Every structure is written in C-alpha cells, then in structure tokens.
Image 1 (cartoon, rainbow, N blue to C red):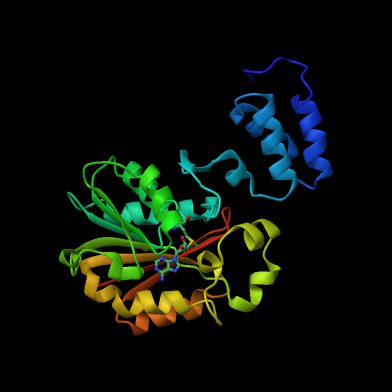
Image 2: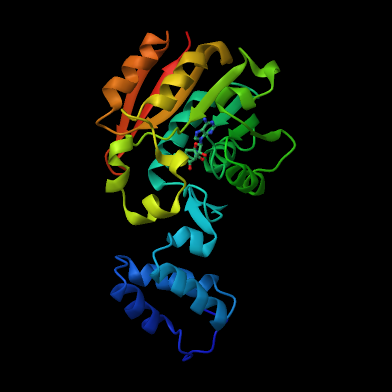
Length: 267
Ligand SMILES: C[S@@+](CC[C@H](N)C(=O)[O-])C[C@H]1O[C@@H](n2cnc3c(N)ncnc32)[C@H](O)[C@@H]1O
C-alpha cells in the first residue's frame, strides 16, 4: 500500500466495512484493489461510491486481470471472465505448430482473448479482432497493439478483410450465449451494467453461434479450428450445430474454472 496517508478516512479497514455492508463478497480484496488503483482520497471516494452503487469492480478500476494481463475495460464493455482463460489455453495449443498463424477473434469485446493468445504464443501470429460495438472496438484498440494486429468494427465475419477467407488457423469466438429468458437471472453487475448484445444469445442461447457456425468452414484454413465457450447445459446442442456445419468437434471442460470449450476443426 502506498500513495495515501495511513489514516485518512478512506483507509482500507473503513473501506472493507463499507464494501461488506454493500454486499461485496470479496470486500478485503476489492478494498485493496481500489486503494492501490485510486490516485488520491477524492478518487478513492468516487470509486468506492460507484462500487457501492453496484458497478462492476472492473468498470470502477478501469481494468480486469485476465491470464496474468491487465486488460483495460471501459464502462459499457463486457468484462472478460477468468473462465475464458481456458479457451485461450486451448486456442494456444491449436496454434502452436504454425509458424505465423492467422488468428481471428470475433466478438472480441475488450480484446482480452487476442491479447492473451498472442502473449501465450510469444507474439507469433497475425491477429484480427472484431466486434460490432464501437465501445468494445475502442477498448480493444487500447489492449491490442503491434505490427501484425488489426482491430475491426462490424457484424461477425463481415468485419474481416476478404483476403483472410480460407486462411484462418485459429478462430476464437466467445459469442453471447445466455438464453434471452435467463438474462433477468444474471447477477445485477452483468444485467445492469454490461450491454445486452454482449450477453443475449437469443431464445436458446445459440443464435450467434449458429451464425458463426454457418460461415466458419469457409474462413478456416484446412486444419484450422474454431474455439468457442458455452455453458455445460448448452454444450451438446452447440456441438451438434458445429458438427452439422461440417466441423469435427471436441468438447473440453475445466471444473476449476467452470469452463466448457468447444474446438471445431475443419479437416
Ligand atoms: C460475451 S462478450 C465476449 C467478449 C470477449 N470476447 C471476452 O471474452 O471477454 C460478446 C461480445 O460479442 C459482441 N457482439 C455481439 N453481437 C455481435 C455481432 N453480431 N458481431 C460482432 N460482435 C458482436 C458484443 O459486443 C460483445 O463484445
């Protein structure tokens, strides 16, 4: 801890009590992060007030930890979830044999998946990240930089340059997959502070995946793979629609992260 006098009113012990009273389960951890991130007592007060009002911690801090990276997250942009680190690990394994793999991250949000994947590959790869939402694209541009990195705005594959067709080695797409009827059941941080199009997967939660599956084979290189996250409940139906699109599907799970990933290969 540094940067503040030891006993000003926003001292961590007071903060912990305030956060706990507001229902924050990890109050001690959150207090430490707020204290370390704020650049003075006034900012600490503003940040704490926003957190107590229910804003996601990552929106208040302005960043989220993901795969050991600090990812910038602006208000109104989907907060990358730790469970998605599992998808990144699977994607890195798929990319490891190619010399300079072509990587595409559709529905990129903050760009967390692409940033972590490129890091896992030691910077080896040409990365194209894309999202429909201008706020997400702005945020991804902050998180993704490099000579072979491109961030595009647009609807799924329509955002990509045509020259990538048939050349994509690894296609990650953490599409929205919450069934519309389940949105009210989400924690308020997601329900009230993340944009609806980032969460809503349509009536059965698979609307976006269905659209990705329809075009994936024509964008993947031979031997290339599409990786997507889903819920354990939807895994079978999601695998079925990827198989029906002509891809060879493997389902993997990580019980610690509560993560289910589908890897769908074009043979
Ligand atoms: C579940 S979030 C995932 C964000 C990021 N990949 C991650 O894992 O943190 C889904 C993202 O899909 C984007 N999205 C929704 N519909 C889209 C579409 N038709 N085309 C492109 N992006 C879309 C949303 O804006 C949102 O950023």
